[in-house]
Image 1: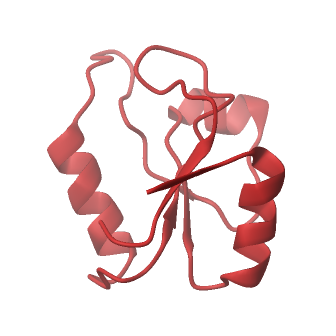
Image 2 (image 1 turned 90 degrees about the vertical axis):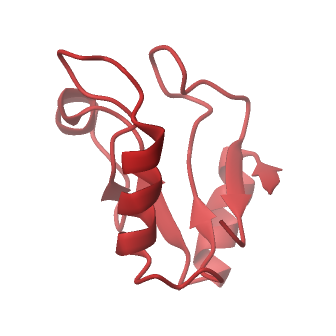
Length: 96
């Protein structure tokens, strides 16, 4: 796993067109705050439970990637609001 700044993540996505760009925010954040183009929304948790669903999330990412375990996945976490999603950089996992 690599950690990238937002600018590095953008450059990575421009040069790795097959990468899966995942937005982990809740639906209200995705709709209200906006979202980047070509992002796939797979929430880490949703209202009202507000509990992370790691197994479900991993299954959804895998399904969205077409079961291609070599497909890079970009998770922008640096500016996410809320518990359990914050991080200084966007992790890029070439294998998951």
